[in-house]
Length: 403
Image (cartoon, rainbow, N blue to C red; front, side, top):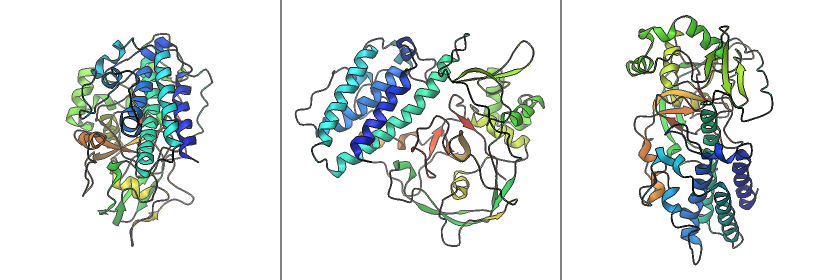
């Protein structure tokens, strides 16, 4: 696929995600960690204008000078930023002007692509498209959180939510220990936090064959899991007590005691077979302790992922029930690991403002692996390192157990 086709496809998908929403929906912000859809659409356009057009377009002039501040996210090297928690106050520009902004920048990028772009321009375009795909996932998670604040339980999607097939019995798949190469290996795109590829020792371990289900997490609740401090990390137990947590973010009981879960398809009866999602690291870790298990390290997850080529004499499954394979590694929910988000040995930030993309967030966060039902097609890979604070719940985050 040509860069032009790839660019057009990604940019159109962002607008498609906004189609079911009203202008009022697109301007709302339900909490500081989330952003309005209108801001996502403008910020991803700001990225191409700021890092590509400003550098490569002859006679560059901004679409609107104020947008440089309004739609800067966290790039201190670019200049001033509108406060993140106040993005819903940006009633101007209107959605129609944001759409015009996108169309203007897209037309100007198309002219650059028609003029035999060099390798550096193509590299920055690839980064910008991957960045926009990250925001496409955020659009869905932020919209879900916003709609969940409404007692009408409005659905983002009118289509029915298909039921999940019955979950297979959980099995443990064991891997031998040894040296393994970790990090991005091929010539395709990766973020800088996936590099450099390096060798590390991984002790023998076992991974659960599938993700933890709603039914299994419900058993944890009914067994008093949210009332037993011995299961929880200290900070997690403080969070349980402070916020009076007793179930995952989007679960609730009706007047008859039946559990329901709010989804992008609206409020639905709890599907026991569906992977449990919207869990913090604290909840994931407490459940793992209750199961006499633990969360995997990110190295364990990566070397166990199908398709990974281990180092010489590296890691192989050594014990698995007949026919058992790791399931749901991608496409269901991001999977918490016990690994703090830290640089790989030899990591170096890129020069300039783009060096702020990942490196400066390597503190007080944990790595998640895989991808979720909201991740755009083609965006996931085995070396991908997502990261969030331990208390984050609004993303599609779930649990794969390890021993």
